Image (tube, rainbow, N blue to C red; front, side, top):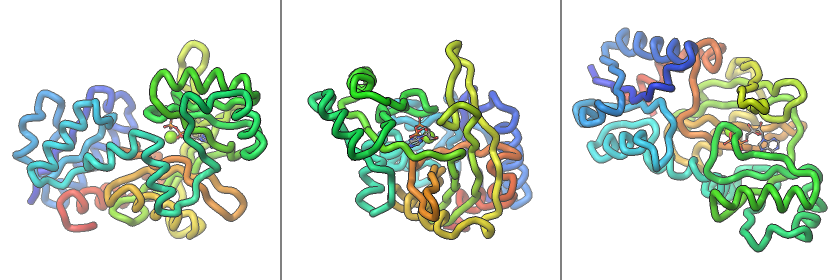
Length: 294
Ligand SMILES: Nc1ncnc2c1ncn2[C@@H]1O[C@H](COP(=O)(O)OP(=O)(O)O)[C@@H](O)[C@H]1O
Ligand SMILES: [Mg+2]
């Protein structure tokens, strides 16, 4: 029997689907003879008493979830996410460089510094990457700082805005599609597959109205054995380029090929969404955490 601690923040409990998934995880842990507790920030000091920690909160080296990950690691616990994965995934430049080093296909991508943000550079990128170009600030999530630009003027303006947050901006060719593939990868194996559908008249799976309201599309689950094996293979290679933990790999399909848009650490797992066609996710997570698998 093992003691599993699930490190959460208040916002983790905002959506009933996410609470539902954590409840299922708890039930499966009990069925397999383990204990599972929820730990808040104030319970951080108890981490060394556990056998494994599963973080379900925003992960960033500047958040307390990172302290939880480090504390777990220093005490020899199994931990999702391990600190190294958090460090790589929270910086898109670092993340894409890992993918490139491991020859994982990504869209046409360059990293720009202040002196690259010129009209001439913009024009030459439109020529080589096509129009539009996608610009991304490196240390962001929830689609907050990911924008399409259509002119060299926009390229310079948005690029300079993003450089206020970082010393590099990512510029990418735009890959058209109606959805993102999301493959959950755990310990080098696919855990679940779904599509995050893109809402009408939008181009990202998540975007915001002028008043800040979130607009997101449906999640459609797929059986692991019914999708293109190349999709799973590309996702596994993307996960392996980062580490051996739990990753949510986002991919776009171009004909019969797949390119990786992002590898997320701490991917959302929500009841009746990611687990739609993968009821085994909870058991796999528990077995990974208690060291019986992966
Ligand atoms: N090169 C691209 N081509 C087409 N769509 C993209 C591209 N890059 C990102 N997107 C869309 O924007 C979303 C957010 O981009 P992403 O790089 O995942 O940043 P974030 O960390 O904010 O999620 C993606 O899920 C995808 O739908
Ligand atoms: Mg993303």
